[in-house]
Image (cartoon, rainbow over all chains, first blue to last red; front, top):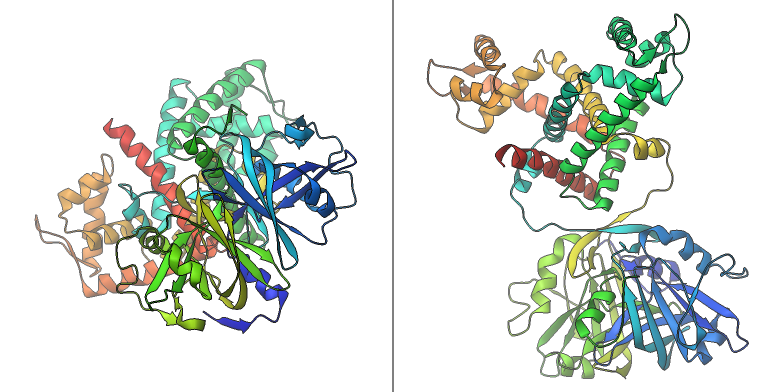
Length: 310
Length: 310
């Protein structure tokens, strides 16, 4: 451990606390005057199973303190990964936090947010003073939960939870192999299946790439050749002429290449096929892991582009 | 939300609570008789910054309850990702949890574990009964923390926290691109750099692969050809003969192919070069993200092998 210190700095303490990953909750109640209140808190935790109880802490300087100090009921919302904006909204004071948000009403008319990973309707059981906060313990009277992946928070950053795998066959070698070998094997396996699928549609992989490029952007032959890079530029012309002959492309000399209706249909058909091949290859990953995998690949691709520019 | 229910089942309540991701802590103290005690808890959280206070809960049926109900001092350890085993050890009772573990001693001679993401030395400030647990509030008298990635827990599974990226250039396209396109671009970029590096060492990519295969396992030419698969088998013989001529391989007819000392040195040199290319490509990923990326790639490779077998 590198940094040992007596508690002299709130910032250092906060940083150390940040080592503990948490979920993110929004806790709502109804003030004495009937106004809806809500705060973002990551100080939530379970306390008791029988009776079911949870706790969280609220700062003494919170603008919602008074409401929570008298509220008989409150609702804890465990936020889902796509609710980062909601966390931000309820963390800021001085605005109408509920503006434009559709809510349901729980016990005691407490506003309840939608789309959360879980919600706990609570009756306030105890309030304990602790330093500059109050600990609020609630007895859970009702709850619901959904399989939304939860938003996570760690070191002052939002993120997500990725579970560790139990040891699986094929994992140990992955640790040893060169990354490039893994990448080549993954790419080979995927491309081989895609080529099989494409050959049934009588479209080659380069032809597919031309169709996709033309579908994405307005290009003429020269621009297409430039995208393909040196070495492939002569091939492109042949591919384009061949695809035009087969009725997939309109390719007027010097003008922009466009997909014909037939070309559009062919592209759509094989794209769907490829997506289902990809889905099968990724079937052991969760949707969030797939998103992460894409992100990592994009970063690697990006690093080469930076290299090329720099 | 699909499942709404009054609180009638501890299991459903536990599942709903599982929606909240947490870190994992081990909390240690010294019993009245001088014995070291420790429990695993994910009910830890921060409470107050000024004075610095934290809390956690202990079950009334915990075998360590008596020790913590009288302990003046305790230490909270936030576990790092590689301390899953420690979490398991301190979650089980009936064994000597500290057997074979080297500890330091904190205030009040409390045992302190090493290699954690953070540690908080606390004086017990309050104990509050709450259902089947006691909430223990500690005032933090000292703490240290390290940049170890923390162990995370969610839905009954260990895992890790992966932070969300702020929007970065190159990320938006990643969402749209076909996965196979990203994979091809990443592989192309990496292989191009590796080939550049290899060409300086006057070793081709297929030659490198032969050197690596022979270094990993004892193979003769036929076995090597089999690994390479149909189509490449004739090439392999040429590669092996060429590498033998250059003094990198001993390849007796029919016998096992072995690396010469020179071949070993050449392989080691280019492997180091390739690893540094890979490191550069992965430099925007954290070590944990790299480990995840490898895991995902291995799963994809594995999915093709399953396909081939099934």
